[in-house]
Image 1 (spheres, rainbow, N blue to C red):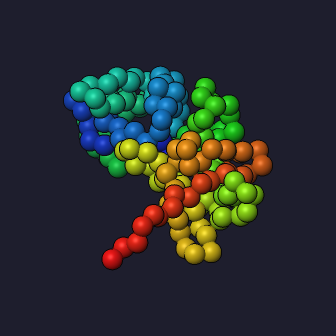
Image 2 (cartoon, helix red, strand yellow; image 1 turned 90 degrees about the vertical axis):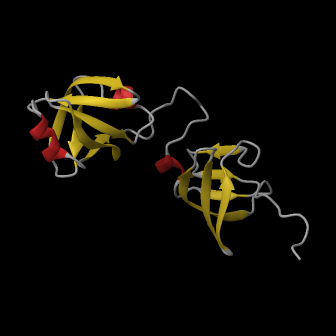
Image 3 (tube, helix red, strand yellow; image 1 turned 135 degrees about the vertical axis):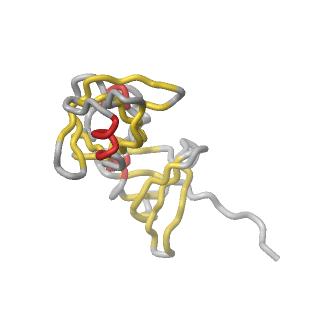
Length: 167
């Protein structure tokens, strides 16, 4: 599956390096020297150098050797072909596309809704679930999402309950 992994920012220096806004959990893999990324204009760029400077990823691409060439690529989106079903090092790690479309069921087996999105927040991710009552957001933590069965497209959820009444 073709997924967004980054965006080219401004040029860095005069030798054709570009700052990269990383949009992947695996930048070392997606932007490894020799890797090819696709662009939103259906072109391809081959990574020939990479380093981190002050916390910012800098990449050099084949055929791009000066600042002006990089500036022409500014805001270009970068994509990579990713196998979302590839085994992860962490068994509790899932790709967003594996979760979207999964049935959300209660511990009793009753249907709660369907996962429509995963919202990435600094503290934790949230599952956006379309229910008969509208969209429900559930923190994607083990206490509230004890079972994820990707093979059967089913996720067990324990929706938080609101206690007390508002005056």
